Image 1 (cartoon, rainbow over the protein chains, first blue to last red):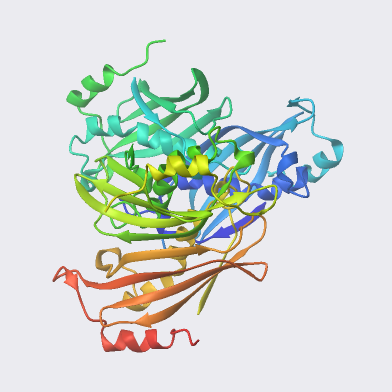
Image 2 (image 1 turned 60 degrees about the vertical axis):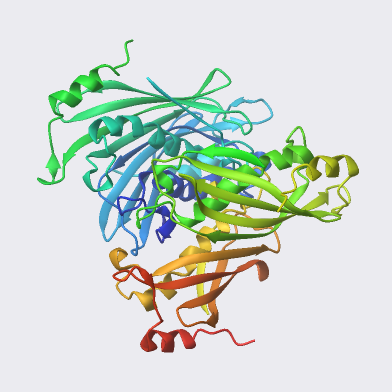
Length: 131
Length: 131
Length: 131
Length: 131
């Protein structure tokens, strides 16, 4: 799994005193950049070839300011032209949130979804989370 | 269903040229305020009694700048101490995103989940989406 | 002056219980879209010809949730190739924040700042705030 | 000066392809936390004793994705009950933005501004930027 450490920001808190729920999807998006790199090594915006189809988040415990958070990112399963990414937020060695999202591999020239090429699939295989 | 109209912001776009995926959860949170009002009519932050347990979003089509967006919010189902809220984003009469979330009714004094009181349940019943 | 009404969002509050200071620049950016339209009537992103050079905000009083906010936008002064935009945030008939920003008119083909054309200047003149 | 390194986020870009201007104030707020710690070592939210009075940002050059950014924070000048904080954003050894803000020391019990105590002033002195 990829690990990405982020310091929660003051502007990410809300009036209830902890990190607002809507911040987790932005952290997860950032955590997925390492997987985007496999599909698009130059991270060229004009060749962006992964589309977010579906996202779900389970909120397990409150996330607080003033303590770093770790975003863990791995692959739950691989389909023909899509993959399920699993992500977790940890703070002070406690699971705070987790979620899966479905990303679709997209061929911009053909404007349609496209099978994941074997060379990419091989790299993704190494990131599959063993249960 | 409750309807809430919002103008997408320039700061909500991303480098791919449309509204960033992580914005939808913030719009949905805002759309749920009308349901929070039923549980907490004064919207007093110290008595906040609804907790987000789980959220999922399906991204159906791109959302663009310079055209207002409508957030529709209704209730998918009612449990003993929780409810499932269904929400949709519409732009130019096209469904752009939809999602469900699970909210838990919480008793702050007892620090535990609590049954939804009958008077509140009655108001929520009127918001249940008929299929 | 242009007026733009926005409902502060739950996700825009912070742990001190009111709207976070960093939200005001995003509201102001949105309020400036009407001025961008004068420079770029189709709001085409590829022809974006106004660049933010400098921004300042005075925070006058706290901004709260659950009450709409009005963003007022006018022109403080017009230069040869730049303009100073004045903006204010009002909530419950009280000035909450105000600020000026300097925008530079830019010629993308020449990659340099460019004089504001007379036809645009005429429309901007009508927005100059009289003291 | 304090240094704080942050990776620009995908959700912080805008449709023009770089980091949106409104993101810089949030990075600056985060960079000031080290100064807040001097005033409020426990960072207790209920004793928050610094209020942002005024903020200004000069945008010097575009900020891009996929390259870390350094936020530098020091003190420009010290008044009786307020201070001017100077901050800069650097990316790839290039100044991208800079700004000053005025923070006021506040006594929550008296609900008014209050002189900066000598012990705090001493620590702040060490952070004054020499020209």
